[in-house]
Image 1 (cartoon, helix red, strand yellow):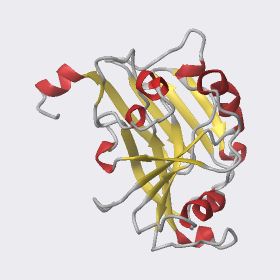
Image 2 (cartoon, rainbow, N blue to C red; image 1 turned 45 degrees about the vertical axis):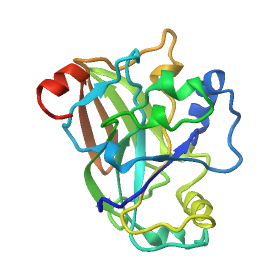
Image 3 (cartoon, rainbow, N blue to C red; image 1 turned 180 degrees about the horizontal axis):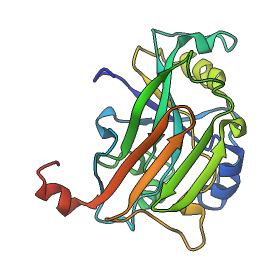
Amino acid sequence: MPRTARVFCVGINYHAHGDESREHSGLDTPKVPMIFGRWADTLVVDGDPVPVPPNEDGLDWEVELAVIIADPVWAADRATASQHVLGYTAFNDLSARKKQLETAQFTLGKNADRSGPIGPVVVTADEIGDPNSLTLRTRVGDSVMQLGNTRDLIHDIPSIIAYITDTVSLKPGDVIATGTPAGVGLGMKPQVYLTAGDTVEVEVENVGVLRTPIVSRADLAARHEL
C-alpha cells in the first residue's frame, strides 16, 4: 500500500451494531454512509503490538472487511463501482472509546498510535467470493466476541464507493474499512476492553486471521518501537 494512501472508515454500518451502539452514540441508523478518516501512519501489520493510551481503560475491538482501491475513481456509478476494487483484507478498527465519545468528532478516538491493524494478506476481487456474504469474527483469548456477516451491512460496498466519490476522488491503494458487526466491548454490560497482555484476533472469511498483541505504552517504548 502506498504511503500516500488514505483510509476511509464507515461508522455504524451494520444493523445489529447500530442497535447496540445507539445508547452510547445517540445516533440513529445512518441514511447515508457515515464516513470518517484514519491517518495512514496508524496502520500496523499482523503481529505488531499496539499500546493502550494512558488515559483509556483499554482499547475496543472492531473487525471489519477492508476494500483496497485499484485505480483512480471519480463519480463512480453504483452499478460499476466494484470494478474499481483491487482486493479485500481484514482490518481491526481499534478504538479509544473515552476520547471517541467525549465529543461528536471521532478523529482522536479513532487514530490512537498504531491502532489500525490490517492484513494479513490482500485477496483479489476475483478470489474473495461474494463480498456481500462473508463471515467476520473477533476472538480475545479463547472467547469469541464478535460473529457477524456482511449480509448485515446497511450500505454495501458499491454504495459506499459511489457516495465517497461524488465528493472525493479515490486513488490506487486507498482503503475503505466498511464497518463492524455487533459485539464490541462498548456494548457489553459491564463494558470489556483490551488491556496489556491481551491478544485479539480478527478474522474475515476467505482472507484469514489478523493477530494483534496489546501492550502498555511503557513496554512499547522499552522495545524502542514508538
